[in-house]
Image (cartoon, rainbow, N blue to C red; front, side, top):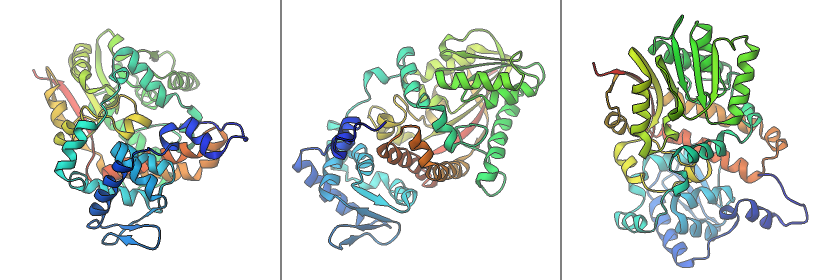
Length: 411
């Protein structure tokens, strides 16, 4: 992510640090097939796709400019949606309204590729690497690759609470209201888990410590676990600065290493990193750690069940570049893996997450020079901007949802 010697050409530099974004795939045949499918698909989309030479396709809408069509088509032909994201990283295409372009595509994702091509894709698509599947060692590596990038990086685009999950807005969303909306989200999770004076609370996924701090301020005794060294260090410092070290213990540990019994358990957007094969393990751990009569509050991003099943064994752009080993569950998948737990209440924060992501993306773009000063290069900026816009589009298109679930035992 950092720059290399100035004697190296830009192309060579990008190829060395970002090999798949810096090197155009060789296959002309796959590129030709991708060109045919792409041009056929965009003709009927509410987009304006501008091609070199003044040619334009689509029925009108957000503008997508294809600057290097040959490289663009070859990347898509070689790697599908991964190649589409890599093409943006490599500047093969541009968009002034990136979330707008991606929202149109997300709304029509199941129909963009003909069924016969989808069947061929399943034969060629790469599965998730085995070393990212979610065992204890791979979970540590997966978490570190994202959350240990740099606390300073996240501080540039997150609000003062350093909270990295959907906020809960009570009115119009703006940067000035974001911190309050994050605290409102946290307070609702704590309320649903009935966290108060003397509550023994387990938090799975510390983040940078805001939830633990707010729980301790209610009088709870908090144990919080994280696999991120960077998050752990900052969260411990924040707890000490607040004078709450006697009420909060933050452990650098896997959820599978936790023992004891807790009156309440809270976990905000952590199950997405667990890995599909470990969903039963995660919910069994919650059940075993929960005291009789206790409550659990989790917040989780979900996707439609059929789309989840279709992508269960594939490697995606998000997994390759942002969240290795990650997998979004469906609501059905959660219900099927609850064991002896049941969902007592649920609340969707889908529109709130779209706004949260918009604010993060806009803040990141405002602070991009400060991020560069941390050592992150231009390809990283395009990757991170694409990630935030891609996620925002998922919620705006209603392809993704995010829920707060209140769980208790069946009895």
